[in-house]
Image (cartoon, rainbow, N blue to C red):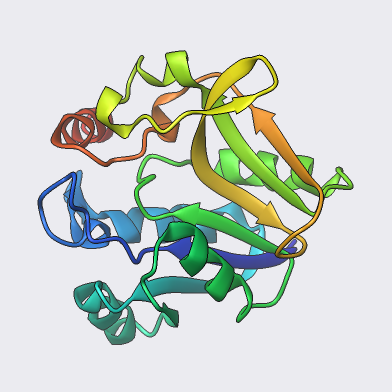
Length: 196
């Protein structure tokens, strides 16, 4: 059952990774954008999919256009600003995934969307405990925020009924699929997981 729009945030330059545009970096022989789009399509929770790119991601824009993917071009002023721009141009509700989650599984997407739909919150995001992130992820990727007494690491996964309003955070235990591939260490890890 299709329930929302899908939006893949793919406008980053991949500076920490140092291999060019992050969306085009290969993991397990496929580009990150291919893996995330495949999981999103397979989740059967979206009826329309867009890829948000910025002026700094021309290669990703070309890749999308050659494959007929729907694109939203943002100003490239930063993730939060670009996300808000992209959300203003797509139909809500919208499921957002970052392009640097190449290990995300369709089942996880389905479960998150179904759980988010049961809440009354306008915005629902998914995070993991910051200390658990280091089980698989790099310390250089940590950008923890405080949620009550807990330090959490956002995954970048979100469900938006609107662009602002009441916010709820789901905190789940760390799993390999929640590793944001921002560093070479995380890229090596993701390649190892996909080779199993």
